[in-house]
Length: 394
Length: 158
Image 1 (cartoon, helix red, strand yellow):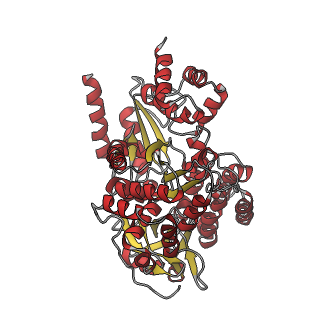
Image 2 (cartoon, rainbow over the protein chains, first blue to last red):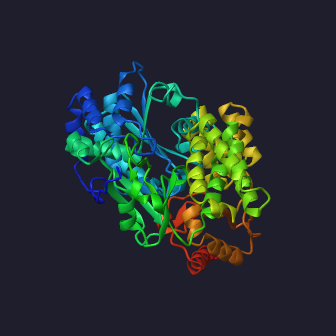
Image 3 (cartoon, chains in turn brown, cyan):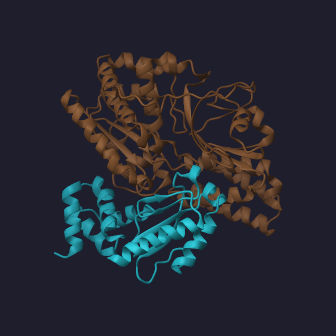
């Protein structure tokens, strides 16, 4: 993966296509099994960050004998540095709805929900209008599928799929133990497909243009395109659809301000890559033999040399400390102690070697925390402390 | 029936009386009352027949469900990394200076409450803030003062 790929701009997601009715009706004429096979052969992986194969998720839910099933669109976009899902929902919402209905047809679900984060409440009037139109069309064509919006209320952890379901059930948004996975027992204990907004739109692309078109983009193990939310020290912040597998070096050539010191890939729960490692790092899912592969929900934050990495880490840890749901001890206490720890080292109250103790703590959290939040604190913590140790101390 | 009871009853009629309606009902009360009083949470618990502690537990989990009295307009300034790098503090100072309140406080006329919040998802247009559900981006101290005077004017006319 160290070989350099040019950045390849693509335009599928935001391409304005007014043919969703046609795509929906022609897709619904095909057999569910055929559609699942098409999705599996596209090798689409979840675009929320975790990268679970989408076709497999739909297949597992479709295979369940339960009568009641659900489709949920996860629009609780809370990862620092991501803002693509809002853009999708405001520019091409009908693609999301179409994909949800197709998923309902394949899996046998009759009910779909969009879990929208409270911060995006201003999208509600417009989105409800599109849903009304969509439901009217479903009624006309005798398609038994209903979609409603469920509003979040400002909790990052509710982006975790099982926490999201707890929240929809009227409880505190605390992640559940897995297994059982949502495909077996999700919302209300029923089989549930839960996909990120962007993942659903990619399935629209796949059903419209065919799996091959999607598969031909990107690189091995990381097929297709991805939306990247670019922010920080860059002359052109915004949302860009790019082929997966690009090298970070090329990314920085394109988006850097000429003085890029480090890039945070995947938001606060992702990895910080320092300048000297740009050329070895590629953006895509794991599975490559050489170099570093960085999976991402699409958050790319650039920092130039005027930024203190201590402040960056301090900001992340404060974020995690506040957003930890408090359910499991490693994450609740771990996040607090990491924040106190780096401050103590900075003030000189603890020796520099204390950082190594904190690194071991993040390792413990990685193994023992219940969900992705506590497990992934180690990513940004270790990548910042190991690469910018001197900035943590002095 | 007093206003809270009526409000909760209406919301329960609209969203249903099952556990899944707790969050929509809580959000409905906040929309109307700006915050959740102990009274309103007990009323919700009674209406859908679950322990009040469960309603309280759910309510206090979510940062947008206030359980303390707030002003008419809740200002939430994003403090996550990109907004912090792009001048969040100057925005805060401008607001504090203009409204004469500190972080977490409400103006004496009960119009504005100033809070910080985590990533609002506008990093490409940082710094950003929410006033109730309205979003404001690419803020500068001047722009913030203009926005706030707009809100103050509307209020004065009421």
